[in-house]
Length: 615
Image (cartoon, rainbow, N blue to C red; front, side, top):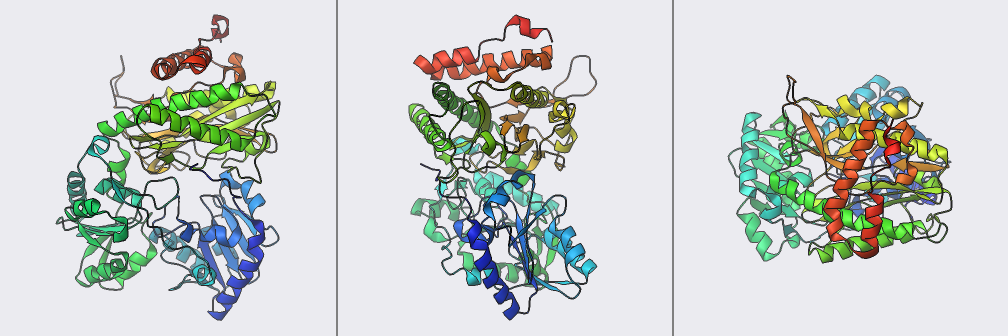
């Protein structure tokens, strides 16, 4: 199994570890310390060694911050984790704050005492974050203090070693562009920013630029390291050579000078002393890098990671790979849903479904000679009230039986060498209530609204986020997460910079892959989320119109549960979209199924009765 079911977070760890941390802070003349859920690369997934927030607090979510003061401690989370955090941390030790409504930069300004010295690790905060932190501290009359030694590391006696997973080459048939061509494009972009060099801190950008993959973090094929790209083409890669086979080493040596990680800081310092103008992404680059450059006479050029947009706008090989991966994955999900439909309510638990789904994906991968490489994240398998925990992670202590009359939410994804998938379906165990059916239908209407949308060039994710919420809003309902996130090509399942959300300010460009996943969550009762991945199509002329318009191509292929529909709430256009989608699902993944699974799919994808199309 790629997924493990160990307990996610342990509330009991907080009290003794916070006490030990406070003693360290007192011994080092600090009044507090910030512990982000981050590593030096600012990735969503971090290696075990960098799981400092979880080690200190018990909170296992993918986004959060802790602030520990002499007499108080706080954990900041966003709306996805408001239920989970209360289950995983000791509420006698930590108060809970909103990462969105009252983020640390605001909280510090209002709560930190005058003269207080607040420590932070400059490797774990971006230059943009520290700029906001300094402004907030100045407002409070406090001082942010960068530390040389992270105190969590100092008190974590059994901290794991850095990961050393092997690096592998990503074949050109899937990458679609040679690494030397990508690096030439990036060098040109550095010159355009009037910089001499750019530091790549995001392992996804390094993986994309060099056409390599790794295994240093869970469920995302990344090799951790840094790269210094040069406008003149003399690039350097800083990565532990123990990860390289002879073939990989020979390949990388043709593209860049290979160096050990310990050489990275001295290399930045030497460039800075030579007067280099070094591009750093304020949203990604660690504050420590700014310090190294500016304190040694170099110039920081604030510029976006040059690989982010090229990586996000998929080429034709990557798009073809994604389509193939979604057909394969859709067949596996159909097998799982067919199996689940045969199970009696109360006969299995959440872990049993996760295990069966991975089995279906492995089997389908073997049949198509494109093996499952990993899951793309820990499957969210939520029965009844667990489904209302947006990023619930099932464990052996929380696994719940799928009970009669409950909803079951299944959010999962896969990593294949030709593409990354992410899909959510919600199904009833037994007969759903009218409220469940109504709210499922409202969520589906939001998804269909995004799927059918046409939009002009330069449209941002924030410009269309409301489309996914309008049906819910009309009924006084909403969901506390973004509508969609970017997705990589055999890379991170959550990829920036594109997203559909109130905060999604990046333009949606041709070739970008994004999730489309509205939801509804009734605390203590059930959760509903429906998710397809979509692709931004080229802008095309619209008959009789003046402006070329983009649209979305739906990549995900799996039926929606018609037992959950209240078709009286749907328009004729929405119903026609659903029938057309189901016809496409049957046509594309039906040939990959047979027997009982094919018969189930044919029934699941059958057109809705004509009487239901009068809305």
